[in-house]
Length: 101
Length: 122
Image (tube, helix red, strand yellow):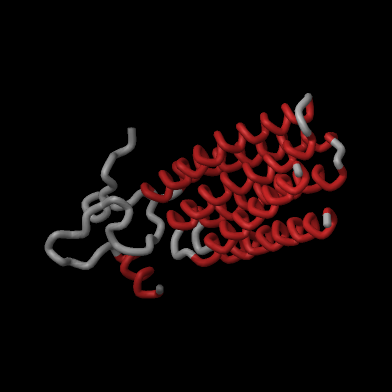
């Protein structure tokens, strides 16, 4: 039972990563691509966790920590860069409820 | 018993990640996609790491998994909030006029060109 369930889990995560890669290739705006990249990295962390579950060795745990840290920093850096690079909404037409702090 | 619990956690976590991917593919704009991905991904990865924690048991290895779990649960909402803030302030097309927190124009004039074009497409 153990290999069957783990194979099912690995297949599901690979399918999720594939769907996220489709959105990463198709995404109409750059923000959709950033969201899809975030999901791809989180799916990779889940796959490493499933490898740990299958082999039973704790040698990949540092890899889990490092990958999650890299994914978070990627999203934050891209977001801070895009906040300056993307054009703002026109004021008066689409005014957000709160201005920038 | 513990093994079966770990398998149940891993399976439900993978199901949630699949749900996040389907939401990312099907929902209409960047805010909706960030919404779907943030919630389902946070719970899904937490369940998968709980399965790993149950399998490894307490000790140094379990402590590292718990650290990764807390880190993921703390960082995924922060990243999603930053993304949603950029999507709110930047000039990207949104699904419906006025859904970004702004009231629709009071005199019935058409919304912004980007929004009107996008809602005509979808």
